[in-house]
Image (cartoon, rainbow, N blue to C red; front, side, top):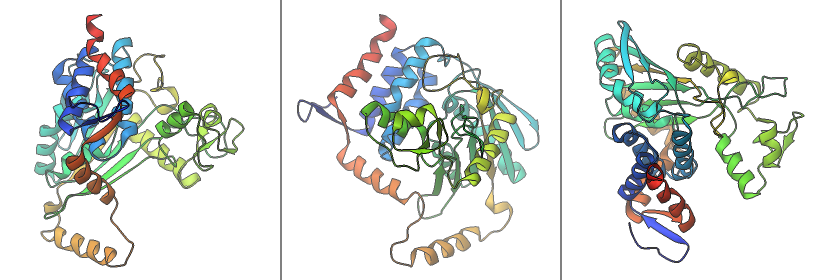
Length: 343
C-alpha cells in the first residue's frame, strides 16, 4: 500500500482498493472466487465516488461473513426454466457472485430470444445495482434491474416501515460513448446515507426520512426509528412495491417486510432477491443507436443539462488520476479484517 499522505489519511490506487477489499473478505472467511466480484464492486463504487456502498460498506460485508448472515463459500446454481427465463439460486451467498456466475448464460439467452430475464433468489445485499446493468450494457444489451431489501419505507398513509428502499437501475448501451446508466432507490436517498449521518451525529435534510409518527425530521436517529421518505411521495411507494413484487415475489423468498435487516448481525441471511430484464436492441431495429444518440444530443444541447450518470464518469477519470483518499482509521479498520479468520 502507499504510504500515508499525513498522519490521518491514505491515498490508494483503484487496484489497491481492490486488494484491500479482497483481502478483508477472504480474511473473514469468503472463498476468493466468491469474494472477487464483491471486491470489484467496491473498487468500482470508489471509482464512481460512491463511498457509502464502497469502502464504508465493506465492514458490513465482513461482519456478516463472520456471523453467518452471508455464506462466503456458497455455490450458486442456475437453470433455464423457459426459453427466456433463468433462475439462479445464490444459496445465501453474495448477489454479485451469483450474478457473475449466471452472466454468460443470461447474455446467450437474451441474444437467442431478443429478450431475456434472470431472477436471483436466496440472495444478499446487491450494493450498487447499476454495477450489474453496466455489465449487460458492455454486451450491447439494454437492461433493467430490481433489488428488494429489508423494510425501510412505510406504505402510503402508514407510519411503519414495510417496503425496502428497493433500488432499480436501467442501462442503455452507446456505440461510441460509455453507456447511459440510471440507478436510483425508491426512497429519496439511500438508507446508508441516513445511517452515516446518525453515526456522525449530523442532521439530515427534512425530505430524507420520517420519524415514528410519520413526520419529516432532520434528526437522523429519529429517521432510523421511523421510516425512509419515498421518492416522489406515493409514487415512490408504488415503485418500491413494484420492485418488491419482481425481486422478492419472483426471487426472494423474502419480501421486504419479512427480510432480515442488512444493518446489523441479527436475523440470519436476509433471503432477498434480484430480478433482471435484458433486451437485444438489434432484434427490434438496426438504427437504435442513431435514434438514441440523436435524442441525447438534442437533450444536452441546452446549457446546464447532462445525462444521468455523467457525474460518475467525471469521478472515474479523477480517481484513475488521483487515487482514492480514505482516513487512516478506516484503512486500519478494514485492513484488520484480513486477519480475522486467523484469530
